[in-house]
Image 1 (cartoon, each protein chain N blue to C red):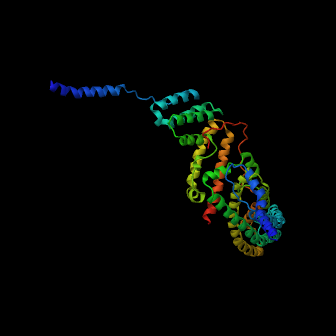
Image 2: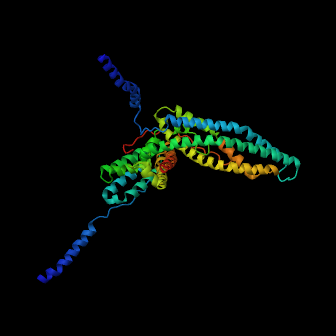
Length: 277
Length: 178
């Protein structure tokens, strides 16, 4: 009995070691090319996935409404209603347009609190990770070595386009982030994630501010449009709000085109100086 | 006799001092003016060893200009060997030679050297650091691109600057939010 107890005790004490074995072996096999950091634990990964889902739900809710708005606006312009006040046909189109606009505001109003929670959660998790792992555990030189851990070609392939110029749907952008982070095994891929983490964090930081502002604006815009329904007016502000929603959710930018990168080079550089740091 | 000796002595001293000054040769610190990098390096080495060390920066700049006239990928090695010679001959410390080499011929930024963490050291001087990196990128453009034809490394350095700017913007926002 005593023998059995002691062997069980020994087994229990060995169990953590046995479980840790593969982890230790894996850690030992990772080449020590630069500081290794953990920016994307499961919780952050889950936050990103969830934010993408919420964005997708909101997109699918808004997509048909925005398409309808586009059609109505086109009809309004083709019918030369701009400036034709008092025309009963034009008033009718303007009222329909205003009603669709109200639908859009309602869908946004319903979806934004969830979006806000998801975005805030992702932002807070990344904020904590970036502060600890990059801000407090790294010198600027460490950061440089971490960023150089990945080759330029790998970086170009794996990273989503730079912030604010992606031309992607919001949900697609998050899907790419998630896939990149979840499937990005290997040391070099892991190191390029510092840029991805920074990119997502800054996006989320801006999105939080934007969502808060949008929520404030929605109630005001709803009230104004309810009043406008009585008069049937399409305001430039309405067009601006629709344009803004399209650009945020569907990545439709009318302004700057993405800047192309430099041409690939075929010069081979094998020399390594003994002075190199 | 005594009076003669006393009056002649200062004169003799003056002559001795004057002739002494006239015989000490002034070092020839004219910068190399040819187009051949090897020849320019050899002449620079001779002059730097003969009293022109104070003008090292000017010599280094001139050698880069000469190399720009005939860019080759092997110039990296040539400059590395020249800088190693400067440490061997005691003109520069190893650290100084490394600073010169890496500033012009390596992807890594010497401006990012620092021993303290990013929250406490880098973030308070973020703008200044990025300005220094931009200046260093100009030197890398000369060393990597125009002298050594190493486009890949230069574009990687350019990319690194952008990545650093992005990561620091995020990290410093996160540090400040604490």
